[in-house]
Amino acid sequence: MVSGIVAGRLALVTGAGSGIGRAACQVLSREGAIVVAADKNYDAAMETIKTHTALASGKNDADHMAVELDVSNSTAVRNLLTTIMQQYKAPPTIVVNSAGITRDNWLLKLSEEDYDSVLNTNLKGTFLVMQTFSKAMSEAGLPGSIVNLSSIVGKYGNMGQTNYAASKAGVVGMTQSAAQELGKFNIRVNAILPGFIETPMVKTVPEKVVQGIMKMVPLGRLGSPTELAEVIAFLSSDKSSFMTGASIDVTGGY
Ligand code: NAP
Image (cartoon, rainbow, N blue to C red):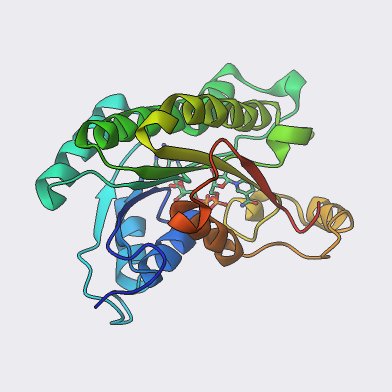
């Protein structure tokens, strides 16, 4: 018998091959969910299923799945829904949009290509996944929870990240609007604004910059992916049943 705050629910996690997405798969499966781990990098998603889910440690008998997905490709997103419906006979009722990229540069040097790729993955990707899967949930008459990864940078900006900050501010506006539209279907939509979390994404930030940032974090350290995943699990579960349209800072006080 599977137990946990999301026991028996089907969860789709994008960006599941690394960092926060991988930790979300780990915590959601620990809490009893069946996980579909989706990432641009199939091998990384499979590694998540094999070594970072409750299944890997023999704690549940769930039928997790790894899939390749480019969230910015609408055909691929639609095809994923078809695959999931064939496999599980129902859409996921938990959707975590964690796929994201940075292509940092000063405004005066930022290429149009790097602007487009960040907006396409972080903002359009969130839109495509949210639209496709909330439609499936509403058509199936199932209540659900969507968790979108924004960033504290979307709220305050950050030098070298005009493209990224715009995409993440967009995710907040999109989350609030979707929450207003989807409430009538009992589909909740919330955003998390992480501060600086120890993942491969932050490893690209120069050490000097990280040290400067840590001086502005009252808790004096970077966050761990699991600390984010615990909040994701809370928002995915009925423990947060009266929360929708919220944007939650998880920053160590930054
Ligand atoms: P991460 O470790 O780089 O993981 C992101 C994953 O998403 C990677 O496996 C990446 O694959 C995948 N991905 C990239 N583009 C994709 C696409 N088009 N379709 C599907 N998957 C794609 O990053 P993270 O730190 O876990 O970040 C997760 C989310 O939290 C992101 O949205 C990020 O912006 C946000 N966030 C992170 C921090 C932080 O400090 N880490 C702070 C604020 C917000 P590749 O590795 O192959 O690109």
